[in-house]
Image (cartoon, rainbow, N blue to C red):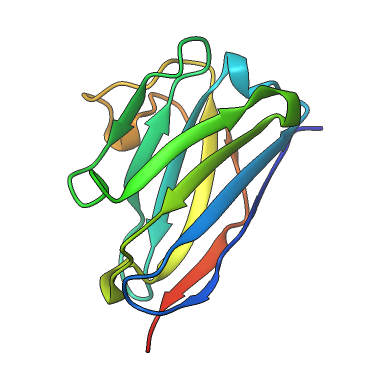
Length: 127
């Protein structure tokens, strides 16, 4: 059984930081591409970033560049998304997804297929 479980969300002040985790079971994330997405209330889900399995190449949308950073711990089979300099517009539920093909800048959400999804972790940026 494949599962992705996000954690690390919460309430943070503008300018603050959070570290989100995407822990996988049933698949090894070093052989899957892992994408991060977010969805704010009343808005469509949007891509945030993607990290390749074998070579750890990373991709970021414009609003994430310079503020969000991907990493992976193979021993823990977990992908992390470090969020810094958070803004109110970053408030959303953050999801991770995994697919067997590599990340691509020409694919919607960077992933050709999104075979597995987590249930999300909410991030609220507010003073």
